[in-house]
Length: 271
Image (cartoon, rainbow, N blue to C red; front, side, top):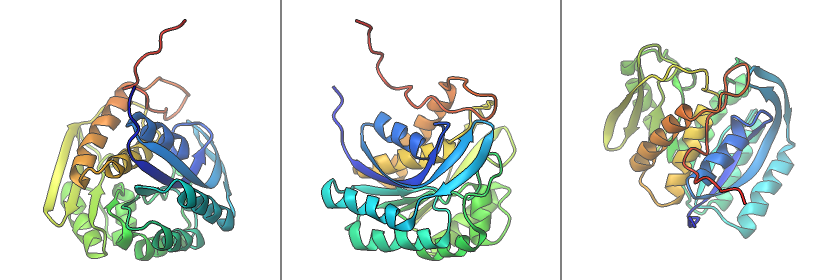
């Protein structure tokens, strides 16, 4: 039996299609043998074809979920996903300062759904940059999100490197600028930290099973940090996990399909 190690508090929105958001986060953390806990920030109406509705959870309810978890179970790492608006970003920053006790924070600055639906208000981008980026042990923007945070286009590896350096200057302890949105046969993720800048490269997998890749990667990193791994080691394992999950995708839905999060689970024999 696999021993559960590491507690991850996930603060993010729900995905009714099960491919991204809280659902992907829980599957990922569980698959990596850590314990997932949640504070749901919004209920989204979505499937593989896109998001058709977003229903925010009242901030006081989000705060109550965080406090309930921290007052009893505690957390070895916090991870944020969809936060919707500036008030919620500020609330999460305040709760983190009050309750995290120094646990690392993984910030996935979710701004736009795969189908183009806005998941973060325009006026909240600056608040996220000021309130959460400086608290992040690992910040995981994709190229368009990085561009919004730094104010210049991020369309090649040189720009990824510049964005990573700029986000370090804003206070993040490390940054992974993901390259999946940048065209080309090779996907390059750029990791920036106090030790320098490093690029991770892998051949692009041609597939429509890309829904929730960002949530999955950030949660896999959070599981690693919760288990005591260094940021770079957590990222290396997380990237391997995500690539395997893409290759194991079940082929569900008519649009951007979910990953095979349980690819590493042992089969259960029927009685």
